[in-house]
Amino acid sequence: MKRISQLAVLFLIPAMALPVAAQKKNSKAKDPQSTTAAAPAQASTPAGMPLANDVSYVIGPSDELSVSVWEQPDLSKAVPVRPDGKISLPLVNDIQAAGKTPMQLMSALVEKYATLGVKSPLVTVTVTAIKSQFIYILGAVGHPGTFPLVPGMTVVQAIASSGGLTLFAKQTKIEIRRVESGQTVRLPFNYKEVMKGVHPEQDIVLKPNDTIFVP
Image (cartoon, rainbow, N blue to C red; front, side, top):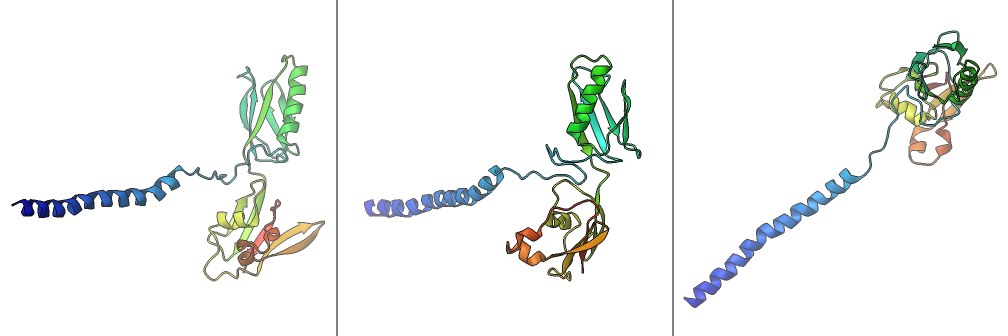
């Protein structure tokens, strides 16, 4: 009887160990998922939106601005830039915005409000939507067409925004066509090499009216 009890204990111990081992295996399998979930998400810039704190961006017609005057809600307003390059604001009426950076427009508004009797005006100018600068992507991409130019946008980012290259795109024969001093300049772009890190300098920052052609 004693021998039977000992055998029963021996069979029972491995049986109990199985759920414990399975639990450990499951917890190990879940660890990579929990690590991935904890990793910070990469922020993306929506098409048509300016990059944060881009002080070099030059405002153009059709751009949308938000003008905020501290403790002056009646003077704060969201406004589009008209085709003539001006915006209309309470008290100020019309003021030139196109051709200025947000900081330059802010300085002009501070000076204007001060002359109109607003005491120590604190003004913030934000470009909420870029609608004055575009690039063109043609050829073997998912969605060829016209795209808003986001400040700092590179060739790879532009191709991604157009849906990426098609299956039969000639990845080594891509061109960026740019007009400089009245002349069309053709800049070669080898997608395969850039993605491998061989020629990262080819992934240039795009300028307004650049055309990316993918044969």
